[in-house]
Image 1 (tube, rainbow, N blue to C red):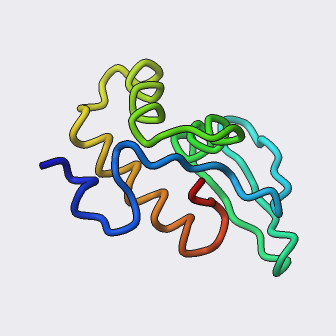
Image 2: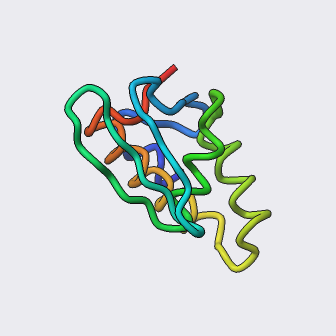
Amino acid sequence: MSIVDTMPSLSLDTPVRASPQLVSCEVADEAVLLSMRDGQYYGLNEVGASIWKLIQQPRTVVQIRDALLEEYSDMEPHEGERAIAEFLNEMISFKLVDLV
């Protein structure tokens, strides 16, 4: 069983995309998001910014994982799944990412 399978809202095949109600910009290797819904700002580190770029179009969790494994060769697949699931679940809870 994959670690993602233990997270209630996501599986490896779940497609997600960035909420269209956000404005974002890159700052160095990071990203800053502004929610048009509530006016809140959010900062993303380098990996979060990489995920953010990927989900401008709908992608499944496994597609995100595979792209990150190519970009960050020192990432372990299982560890990557866990980190991606935690990140996406947090983003979903803030309504920054939509399930497609």
